[in-house]
Length: 215
Image 1 (cartoon, rainbow, N blue to C red):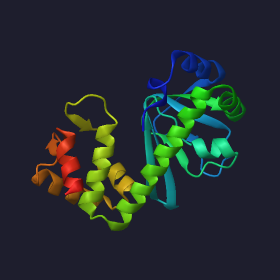
Image 2: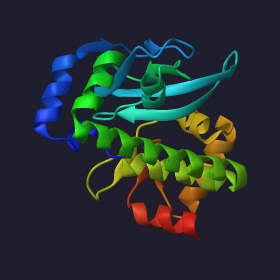
Image 3: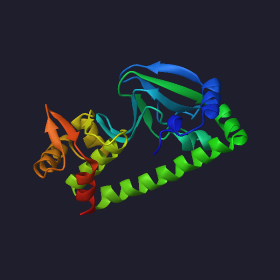
């Protein structure tokens, strides 16, 4: 999905910054907890934030990773429900927090913001549908490849992308064990779909990943 702050007008960006407040979160600091009232809409100004479900003590599933310019947790802020998952900063992160009342008022007064939020919701629905299908039908290698492609597509430009996420995080996003994920990454590297440099996964080009997933 397109980052919010890079796809809207300067007037709307100024309005959102004016009605929101900026807060910095440290590494592993909680932004909000699953089950909390959805009191604000978060937009990432810098850094990265993950949303996770705790299945049991010590076991979590990452349901989304959000970086510069992206908003998240839109549905519960819109309908006044509770946050469905916990959000935690993966690194030091600056967030613009927009109170729910200000979010709703901006929806009412700005058609640009309304259409931007609708576009975000449609993209999220498509992404969740694809994720469910991937988890239900794909092999571990396809599941990992899908996650790597998603992460690579978030980066601008056509050059190589260095995946900075830990193997454990990729595993939690793919719904696999860390060991299975490591084996899958090695198999993808053996097939030339990705490369491994100094212990980091590098996507030299997006096309081999896309071809692998479509093949």
